[in-house]
Amino acid sequence: GDIEAYPGMARERHVAGKMPLRNAYGEAVSAWRRKDPIEKGSGSTKLSVKEFWTERVSAEELAGEKERILKQDKVTVRDVEHLINYRAFVAAFPGGLPGRERHGSLPCVGS
Image 1: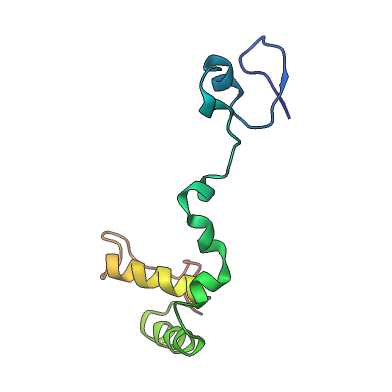
Image 2 (image 1 turned 30 degrees about the horizontal axis):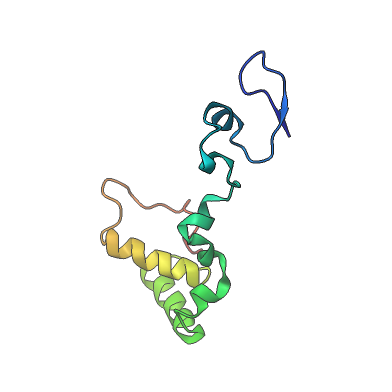
């Protein structure tokens, strides 16, 4: 879309999102690179691929863990990604979050 880099400046067509920096540092080659989503440079785009998660936990293990966690912790595990993140949370906070009481309004608490 069109942007106004600062008040009173004529609106300019903007494609890459860095127009003010490009105007200020036009000699910098990096100022003209294309704008990529942050996850592209960090490598986290792999996390959005279903196979990334399903290769780490079998369907049988997921089913067993869903049942165990629901019974033991009263938490409904939605999918493999949720299971892996839940495991990481429990490892980091074995007694839950300090000073935080669990209650039934949490979205992952089973019914």
